[in-house]
Length: 200
View 1 (tube, one colour):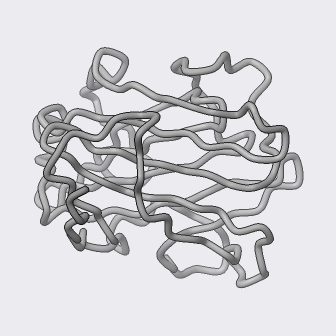
View 2 (cartoon, helix red, strand yellow):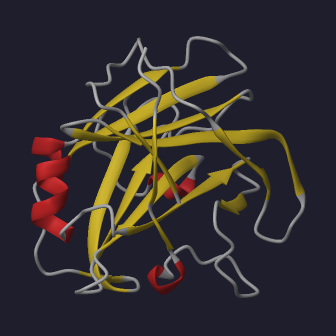
């Protein structure tokens, strides 16, 4: 999975990251407009950016920028990061209004006994002022990711999206296989592919 590498710190409001697109759902049906995303790393943090030129259906019980469970019942962007040695992986959810949720799994869909202090470390941003478009970002300290899942450039990852709620459609950056949508297939995640951002 493409990982853009910045040698200088990134900042919300000054982001100039390349966007990649997801233009079909789990079954290959077209998605219009496409979902845009970017995964980037600077000297201290990992950034997950999601955007779309269409309205989003956010969870009504999810205040902006707050930790909120069960975001996947509405529109959400999801990032998965796995520790290839232990099999543990993180699921990180990001809504259009910056509401978010996170969990660690010891194996597919099996929550780990250890619960990292996500709320102490993760921050989010959002800009949903335009009625027909949104952009949001999740920012995670690299040191925290190293402590929880031994994160590094050898890690594997995938991004996925649930859109068009309440008639939900399911979208994955990497085709994970299977006849029904299931994002919890860490054995199918892609190894990170670092690409340096040009200096500004």
